[in-house]
Image 1 (cartoon, one colour):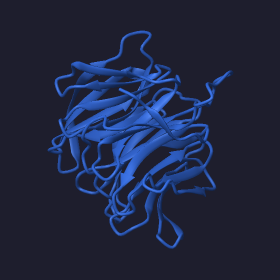
Image 2 (tube, helix red, strand yellow):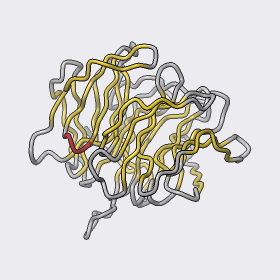
Image 3 (cartoon, one colour):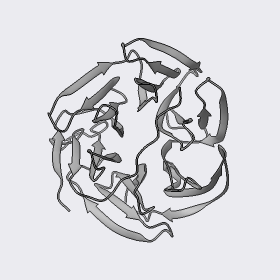
Amino acid sequence: MRWRVAVPAAAELGEGPVWDPAGATLVWVDILGCRVHTLDPATGRRTERTTDQHVGAALPRAGGGLVLSLRDGVFLLDPDGTLRPLHRDPVPGRRANDAAVAPDGSLWAGTMRYDEAGGGGTLSRITGDGTVTTVLDDVSISNGIGWSPDGRLMYYVDTPTRRIDVFDHEAGRIGGRRTLAALEEGAGYPDGLTVDAEGCVWLALWDGAALRRYTPDGRLDRVVRLPVPRVTSCAFGGPDLTDLYVTTARVGLTAPHPLAGALLVLPGAGQGLPQPAFAG
């Protein structure tokens, strides 16, 4: 499977790609660079917005604009550029790290400690009115989140566990946690993920220089090698949701590859699922 460079810009910690069908753009963030990026693949037009704190995720809202998971909480970015808080939750030494919108339009946002201390992070569910429910505590590095095509399963990564876990999901609640797949030594660490129309889970491998595709029963179906070691997340985009966009990072690398931190794309990689917008 061939890849190409979509945007060569070297993000410190590129993350969280998501397709915004309303604007026909891909949205992604540079967490440590405090930037929200967009790309219109049809024209090549790009935008970049700087935030005043580290940004873990930026996701489309149903009424336009974006919802941002920032270091100190969840904020709404209106179409006119106004930024306003939805839920403030500043915790010294902690930041946002990856988020996704569930089928019901709620935001599931993860956190982690800057020092990556075990148990220092959480996964929370935030509704459009700002109601917050802690779904998981005692998380180390909250990472990839995704749902099966029918919304009845939720996939989740706490990176140091080296696993993709799967939960039963119903009405905003999860249970029955079990392992979908565990990574072997030397494969890297699980990071962001996306679920395709066949219900397979695509997983980015931090320090693994690859993407993996797992079937719904946990079988390793495909490995896509990439030129950079720190592959952080992936998402299907384009008008038909057939192009797989991949974020990467250069943070912590003493001699980074020239493409470390670039946005890559695998044209025609598969069929993605339309992603719900945040209902707020």
